[in-house]
Length: 351
Image 1 (cartoon, rainbow, N blue to C red):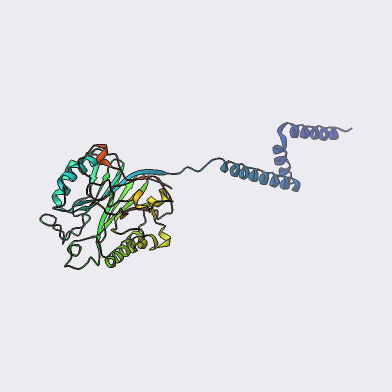
Image 2 (image 1 turned 60 degrees about the vertical axis):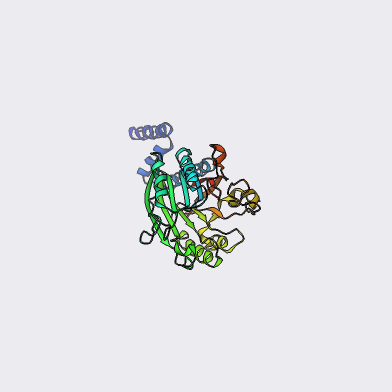
């Protein structure tokens, strides 16, 4: 064997040893350097295998690991507190309401029927430092609301909310277009739609409240339709409507709220929590209840006050609890807070 053949043989053996030592990857680079087509093919196959393997692993992991979600849980109350001047035990009832607002743990307390400015002031001044309240004319038409001598032109709407971890974004009020004959009490008032927009943690929460015409179906129909024209356009993560609609689930006002816009997907929180008997007034009534000290003897229980919920972004909204708290037994109080019952709910929204 010549020296040249010896050298070639040695080089060939060294190449073989390098392949065994450094493995397939080095071999690929080695043969690519020598422009061998088979190496390009093998490298392409290897890369494709690596990509598909990675995708398979990630998909398999997704079957076992849930994506991280954001959520908040809120405690909300709503009450038609019947604070009309001259009504029975008004001062005593407002004193009791101040006790509830001062001592109860909640995120939002919606009030309808707080008609007079001095009553509003007495409540606001009694609040602890971690709670705030909308101004008297903030959820009313300030151009027509008196509230000092009479309740003429006023809405009676207020919202108390916990301010820790909460940022107030905006508030507004829209006077109902049709409020009733000026020869009736409701026709002299300034009933409408109040709303308060809050940022609670990472969520935008918009609270609507209203006090619909007290008796005439014609105006209840018009007002609830107008109400929903605003509620259905809210862009909030969580929408809450606390409403004294003065009519039962079988009547037009309630049906207008539930059927106004199918895309809004508004739900009655009582129905979500008690799907089988939510509309039984003996079990879940909010007016003329026998335990209420202001219910005339023989009056039939009714459901006329509601809390509705929705999400403009179609987030998951769950009712953790729905109930009618009887605060007069807890503290105890001498009289009921109102001739209406308090609505209480714990609600959770998940993004």
